[in-house]
Structure formats: C-alpha cells, structure tokens
Length: 384
Ligand code: PLP
Image (cartoon, rainbow, N blue to C red; front, side, top):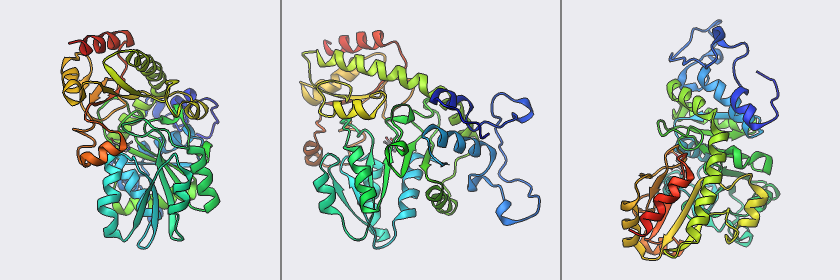
C-alpha cells in the first residue's frame, strides 16, 4: 500500500491498490455493501458508504493523492459535491471569497445565487491581473478560487502568482483542475492548497458516471470529509469502481488528446472560415509561454469562432459527422457544443460578449478518434 511509485503512469496502475490483492483479484472488486460489521462496536470504527470509508473509496483516495503528490484525497458524488462541500467547509457567515471571473457555470451559479443565503460574500477577480486580487482582498477573505484552464475560452491565469498571493496573505488557494488533469498539471506541487476535480470528465473518461474529488493536505481534506459526512455527497461503490477502472488509462488518453487537440487547433487556425482559435498550445495564444512553463501538455479542450457567427456555427455543427453534439467533456468521444446555447446560456448576452463568448463560438472536447479523420470531418463541415 505504501510503496512509492515514481512516475504517474505507474501510480495510475499500482498506487493505492490492496497489497496483497483481495483473494488475488487483479481488478479491485466492487464492495456493494452499505455497512460493515464492527469489531469493537466503537462509532469511530464504523464503515458506511456515506462516510466514504468503504474499500472502493479508500483505494481511490490513496491513488488520487499519489497522482497529485498530496497527503490525502476524498471522492465525492459529483464535481459539484466536491466544489460546494469544500467552499462550505472553509467559508461561513461573514466570510468572503475571491473567485476567478470565468468559472464553470455551476460554480458561478453557486456563488451568485446561493452564497447570499449562507451569509457568504464574494468578489470576482481577473486571474491575469494581480492588482485586482489585492484590490478586492478584505480582512474577512478566507480563500481564492480559480480554474487551471477556463471554460470556454481556455484561458490560463497567473497560477504561480495566485498560489504565492494566497500564501503571502494567509488565505487558502483552491483550484479546479478538471480540464488539466494530474497528467498535465499538479496543483499541490505548484503551491495550491486544494485541488478539485469533476471526475465525471477526464479522470473517468468514458461518459458513464458522475463523480468528484478533493485532493490536498491531510488536515484540510479531513475537515472537508467531516462536512461531506453531513451533507451526504458520497460516491457509490459501483461508480467508484468505474472511476477506478477509467483512471488506469488516464495518462495514455490525455497524452493522445493533448497531441490531437494541438494538431486540430493548428489546422483550424490555418482555415479561412475561422476567426479565432482558443488553445494555450498555439504559439499565437496570449498564455502560451505560461502554459508551456506550467503544463506538461495543453489539454484536449479547445474553442473556436466561426467568421459567419451563430448561423455559421450551427450549420457547421450540423455538417460534422464524427463528433457528438453534447455538453460535458473529457471523454473518449469527441464532443461539440455551442457555449452560448448550452453551458453559458444562463448568462446574459452582454456578459457573454464582455467575456468574449460570442454566439459563433464552438467548444470542442477532443476524444480518442483518429486525429486525421477528425480533421477531415471538420474540413468538410467548414465548406458545407
Ligand atoms: N468543474 C468543471 C470545470 C466542469 O466542467 C464541471 C462540469 O461540467 C464541473 C466542475 C462540475 O462537475 P459535475 O458535473 O461532475 O458535478
């Protein structure tokens, strides 16, 4: 259990696995049991699915912590359960949060629609502008919250600066690392206190479960677990089993997606029908130097704007034959979506325009199909 594995690929396969294997089983069996007999009857020995301490969760905790070089991890029922439970652990009535202004829609809504009912306040800040962090900091600020790569414009904030700012101001730094995955970026090794994931996406990678995770220092994860035990957002053993199975191939999937997305971004950048491609792996991208320094790969997510606006984008989507038209991301299938009509439909048109999310913006989650065939398909759809 405690063997130190050096490389991420090896950790994905071996870290946290039972040693010896249970009855010799090579694959971790599913322990579909809500409760367990207790030896001494002590409350603290209680094993129960809601307490996230049954075998399928425990194996994941050790593997997730090892992947990001952290002390501890905790799986949750969804990415949103990881996010909301973490925020409600460290923020109470009267506290204040600094949050990046381009967050995932669900997180954005939680802050803008639900925070007030808990008496918690927040300010949005520009992840690229340290002056805005300093200007909004208050004595009651407890944490700063950002995403590694933002949706849908694939921006990369000054992540080193944010971690350093949090440390110097003695506030917590929390990052949603869903888009990058530990293959491309490991927040704890880069000075963040807590790394969160929607494991629904790349971590599982097969579009068949929702799950989440929190990774970080043991004392912080312990406090989040205490809150999760009460809020009840625990992961079912069957979903845990599927996540565990999916994670074993994370490195090969993400590395293929890194390469494929870069090739597709370069192809699209050269096309006359395309006005702009957002991908940190492109030399033309504003954050390219930063992403090159911080990341081991630029990820499988990109977005692009068609010159003909919303009509052209809709026509383009309808003309593609390989990608599925669905929101979400990080799976083996290539997915296309129009953020203005899906993930960001809840935002006003003015707010979308201000942030650069135009009606003609297409978001693409690159899957594992042959890159050549994806490019052929996108090419024919652009000229249809
Ligand atoms: N974080 C990011 C970056 C996401 O894209 C999503 C979902 O799309 C979430 C968190 C929420 O995750 P879940 O749907 O697993 O609750």
